[in-house]
Image (cartoon, rainbow, N blue to C red; front, side, top):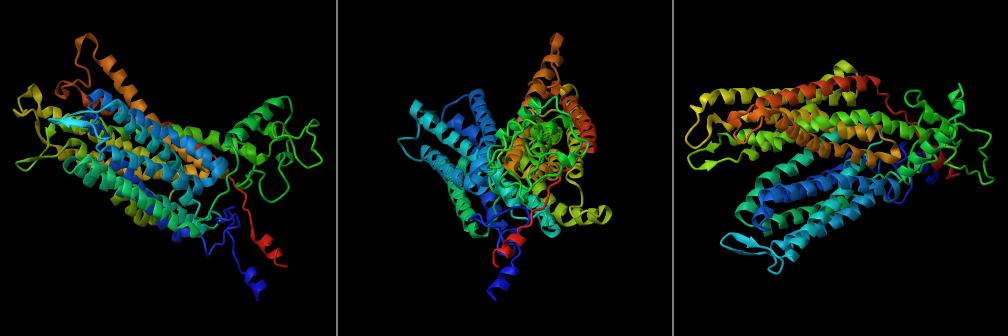
Length: 585
């Protein structure tokens, strides 16, 4: 009976294991049963992150006594570090520790950072001395604040690129039903991010402003503790991908081997290219990949066995002279991803306008709500968050089933189609902002229609449509990116590719800054006020939004060419079941 029971065990076929390194059993691990713990973890972590970062510039101004420019630059440098550090965390996860242990380790660092930041706002020895609303921090007190912030930046780097990939690891993509659920997972993952963001941008900012920074930072620390508990509670259910060793070393080996064999002729029969004969790939934690003819055939020379390639008695080869087809295809996969990755930079530039030009536009409009309350223009970004929260279930429950009827695809759309739709929607977002600006400027012709308080008699809530459209674009492009970079990344480089996709956010901000600088220099020649002067009523912010709309349209055109050229990854399925059955005999 025991032997028959072993025969009935069904294992995953994508190479995943349980915590102890054994092939993962389908019915006991992964799938949606493991995901609530991961989604709760992400929601609480994002609540902690945004709860601490959303109002950070005001903390630096009020408590550290920094000027506008200094505070803004310090927040920018810190935020940039948060988007660079994922490259480090992803490398550790893919090469050595695996995603589970990387997340677990960096979460502890996260809590230490948040706890230290809370202490700087609640312990007298670490709090700056304030008189009459003016604070005078010592160098040591300022140093402790920045130590806490950069501990958090380091911790963020270990978590951001790994959590979404770890969640997707819970679904066996070799089985159609689980593959379909994995696509749905990315939608609800992004939904969880925005739930955390919504609470942080509303409740926690109010607490920091009206109750105090000690509570304002303490609650994110507690939320992060809840995230840690949630993550560890799901431990028995998780599936794991084995770390495959340094991906940078493998890439270098392919490049060196192909250069060394630059004079070698490629065989007409590509099945003659070198690949190990055993079922699993030579790369730990990765499936074998089929050879593709497209793109950089020169790299295939790294897998050509020449007379000089001498196999040792132990069966080993020199990886700096001879690489497997799978190793070569890893590098090809990364190169194929780069043009698609680049298209996300322009989209992120559009997305970044919510924190800059949308806010400046809103500052000139009527922000009154009732006789006494005035809404900050930056608070309208909450409509973007609400838009995402509304659009995710609509996409998952309505758009996908309808699209499936027409396309016959389980996901409804391909990854590339989904991202492309988001790029098109982003054009409409910038067009909407531009049209509103034209209407706003018409209200201030000769400044006769401007109220004595400086505002245009036009409600700031006319901005809501552009925020809502950006939110809809996010659901298609950002969520599509998450899924695309996971699905198309080599098995042993998925965290690295997730980290790569995150860098588009930083580069999008840099591109936005560059555009503003160039536009300001070009349009202010000969004493002209330019498109973006301090007094927007004398400028043409509508032209800037139009420029972004045109850039987005051009970006979409280039994206179409890249998408048509793109070849999807071909992985070979690993079947663990024969091994398990033979071991019982």
